[in-house]
Image (cartoon, rainbow, N blue to C red; front, side, top):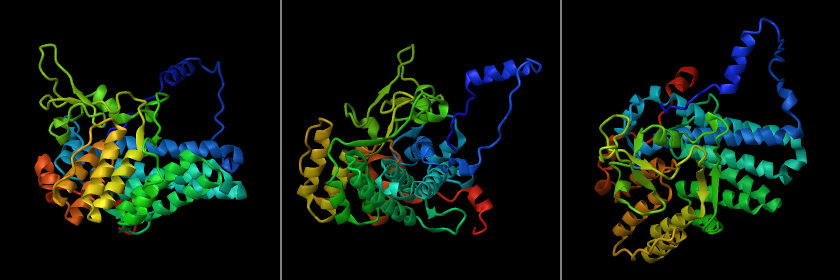
Length: 412
């Protein structure tokens, strides 16, 4: 299970100690829980949507660690037991309880919040940027689940095809697009196109995915928000790779990549001049620098990814030269030199898989990509670049239903 830090704010702790020592000098009345129906006001809707954003970011900040070491993004260099198993491709239901809960909380909060907003806002719902944002958060939460879980489970129901999450996300992104277009909000419209393109690609709707992707500017980025306000709002991967040394770029294909702005990492020297080891005391620690601070945001969709979707759509249609053209447009976004057109379709797939991996590095997307490529027989990148991926068929390729879900859901 990923370690999300839970700390009591210092000021709150000090206040608690002061009150316990005052022997009734101060009287504090606890008003109790706020009745649910008091939230059914238009004025509460911004806070409701901000809560959706926060829950999505919290879930993403946790699972990005899990999915990075399950794939080839990062290598576990630390002391955590479950993560050591993930590194070897072992996923047990009892170890995924927290991440399963975080992802489903983000989905449920967004979807139930949308229903509340419709009731409270009435006709104004269709003319509100808040409604577009809410549907985006629901879509990205369902995409996070759909790309990575083995089985879809909704609110205590039976297990079903994991793609149901992606189908829900497609509908939610379409709704976000409709509302963003109505209110003429270009940023939210781009985010909706980008989210919908990504799930349509995963669903095999490559023509529609490429059409959506073409609508997003190459330099556009839409991010999950992190901050320094509280530890819950921190980017936890930044903490685990700056305050601690739990995840390393060592022993991944990206350790061979130098000077690429998409894959930023460095090594740390000890006082004696050697390479610092990870928290386990033996693995060389190559520190990711994509998220150098606790308030570093994680992209949810971006124009560079859209160019890679268009590249993959072209390659699937047999257009190697066209695919290479989109890859090089993506590289130009980062100021990188163009790559030559691959000599074969097999070489083109290898290039595409590596380039997409660089674009989406440690964004919780690689694990899902590797699953879909493996299922389709596109394994060009795996066998030669990471020993873990050479035995991908023997590793866990998706997130199992959690132990808590099985114990609490009568359908299992």
